[in-house]
Image (cartoon, rainbow, N blue to C red; front, side, top):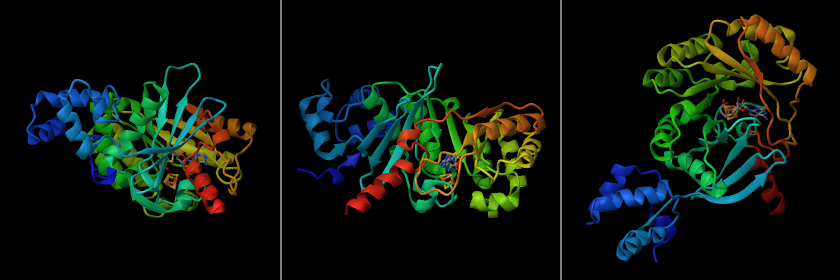
Length: 355
Ligand code: SAH
Ligand code: SF4
């Protein structure tokens, strides 16, 4: 028998690619569409399930090819319904995704990862403390979505690239995955948000592609000196040109962008910071999303401000940004450590302490 790792993974291939494969194996072209439907509409995991294919084709494909490469290691469910998944890639590296539903809406949002670890190394982020391990391929990004839909038997409506990794540092795979999300899974660009720490050249490149994605910028501080410490990529790409690149994205795509601001007690939550944040983005076509810090990771030194500070901060940002919409993110999955990188790191700690 062929070892699973030597079997070629065809998950993520589009109809043309599957057609080329089937024709090269000497079979009729129309079989490709059947296989395509089995993979993407019926979530087949094995060619042997494809009951409308001739037995010899089922067996030939099963012997040499496989559908997908992720293995589910752990699934956790929070008391608020948020679910968190830990997947292993073929080489054993671990990657995580989260599924969230928001009260009063039909939306089911998957938060997916684009890298293992992250080179940006924001000190408050669990993924940052891992350092950069590797980029995910487009099919590995896409499979997180397909896997969850299949497991939960529910259709995901929205995607946010807010799991592990800096999506714009894995540009080609992320853009390709967004295209395949539309073509193969039926989730259009308008339902996909890419969150970035601010890689200016890639923001400009994305602007030129004119894809209708929502772009979210993790700003987290309105002052360069302080942002250099919180989001270290700021040492290279400063705030003023960063805001200009976001304006270019708006002009090119006609899309409103999002400014994300994680609130860290006594670090970036003062009245002064709120005023400067408001002024900084007042001429940008944006919403502002304040994210109270999720401190459920046990070894963090960062703290979440209390609710009255958060509300005052939100009020001041609104006043100074010419009345922009300011939202405070609904906190999800606290009891299962649903912030970026936390499941992976708690799993790693458990494995280390048991070995
Ligand atoms: N690398 C990208 C996307 C992944 S992180 C980025 O930084 O934008 C998604 C968001 O979660 C970012 O705004 C990030 O700063 C924030 N984040 C990371 N750890 C967090 C935590 N413990 N609590 C709240 N937000 C956190
Ligand atoms: Fe990387 Fe984003 Fe975490 Fe910063 S917040 S370390 S950019 S994943």
